[in-house]
Length: 399
Image (cartoon, rainbow, N blue to C red; front, side, top):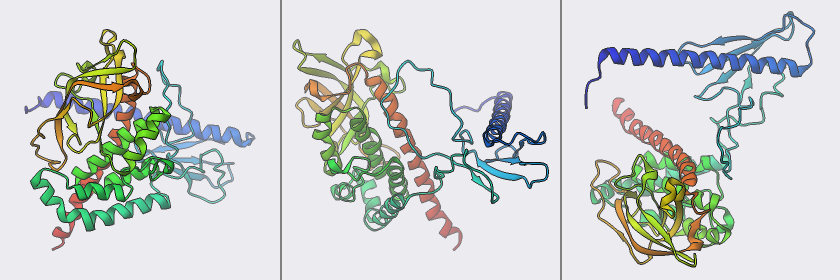
């Protein structure tokens, strides 16, 4: 690496500090507007003293305090609004996104909510019916406890062996399916667990406390492939693959190439349509593909119309046993050694037109959207790894 210029570092830190101060002022302004809106909706406009006092906490704080006296003689009502890196008020309408495309994409119902710090406060306009993100439902707690118990009893004893061997044991993979952890959000009618996204993240987090190699398999499988098929797969494609994905088939996300890593849309893999449009012939090589060695199906991205650039990128759900697919030798990595990361070559691989996920030429949209889900899963993985470090370090400090 290199050592940055101290003067440049000081300038950068000053810019970051100034930007943070601006963000805090914006949050304070939002809080004032929200409190004023609540006053307006309450119908009590008879007192000129009615106002909102906002106290912004020091730099790095995670709360905003709002004080709203109903009348000059009343005791002020104080609410604490958690910031959590987002707008502190979930009920403030956001402006429409400046995009020309909309996605048929289920949105999460969980969000931040505010709670009154004194009795008698009217919280009808503060989204009080939404549960705070720091609380979990009974089902979510059940998933967390199941993963913790299974991880301690079944996974932990073989973690070191799998790391040294550079592979995930088949019985561990089958155990993930048996526990329902590979079909977290797949509906029960397709053999899945029918849980929510938070449950899937809790599973990833708990498994990461013990072995992130196993958790990355669970994360990719659930947040990328399973959800992509659920969101954009045709009814026939869902009926064909969701039951298998929930019960016995590991999946893999085949996107990156030698020349299209960070710039994923510069891919060279092509999908040539037949004259009658009934099938495609895929040629190309993917690199650094996780779960490749264990995969029974690939979510593959290839360009069906290279002349249209990235707008020709199309997603295919491809059976790993299809003729012409070859998985190369796994990479030797410093970490996540039990997770296979391999090159995958597609040579004259023929796939039916019915195996196209969604619409031809819209694969780039699906890729962007589903990777946003996957990144949240990776965040859960990092939290789990940190907790695992504390699990080991804290008892040692107390010895």
